[in-house]
Length: 130
Image 1 (tube, rainbow, N blue to C red):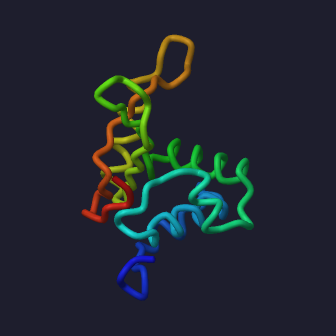
Image 2 (image 1 turned 135 degrees about the vertical axis):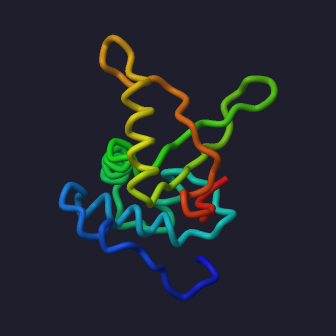
Image 3 (image 1 turned 45 degrees about the vertical axis):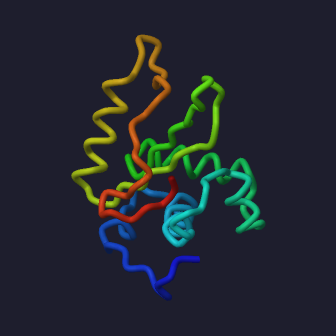
């Protein structure tokens, strides 16, 4: 777990009535993983075995839609897919930019394109994966 014995989180995130309890729980737990943790659904489920894979996927999708996270698949030099990079955005301004970028990346059939931006750091400098 993180070095600090506590997590400080804005009340505006906790009070966001558009965010389900499932998604909020996942967000909070993502924030307490160690800085060097390599994101994966299996890794999350291993740490929190009571969380079913489908619930995790649904919660992550909600967090992506609301602009709280981006998940980008890294590629090796040879082009093979590698680990996933999770970036967390806590400020409203950062989330608005993420939502706008996702909206701009929509294809003509309404599906989001692959390859969302992310550098492995939360908008406040917390490294959540990377």
